[in-house]
Image (cartoon, rainbow, N blue to C red; front, side, top):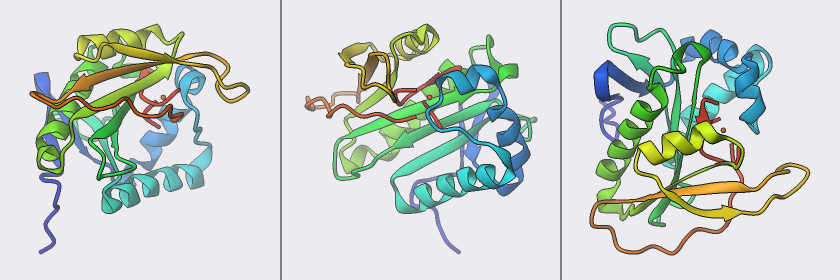
Length: 209
């Protein structure tokens, strides 16, 4: 039997929150999530139609297999088929002690503390799972006017680390970089500026894609 080298497929979060691997049958839920105008405002990568939703799900599976992208569907215990959001850990260079986190939440999940609970669960999982591989720092990026992402980051122990300049036309506004060090982590040099993905979102210049 194939064993997942990154542990269980389900991560238990606070107050009944569950993070699980994305499944093919989540396609309709992904489509509905990306139809939300609030999400479209912040996300750099958009999803239109079933084919693009299938491509999005394929990206999550291949990233997991490659060990560079670990995305979880956010659900609640007993209601695993009701999508609340997405959280993702991105390690473009697994030999580096730095990784990026991102998230988005569905319209029905906002105002319930889902984003902060999911990010907290992902953070704990990441530092525990990759401790022996030298993961020492997590960063969350978002556009400067995304005040909700600032609040979520700070609530989860990611203080503002620096501001990165705008790069029009793709990134017309400055970005915030929030960072959290692993427990007893050694100092890691800040990463180079990165543009990525992000409503109820955070992570990447826009977030969780």
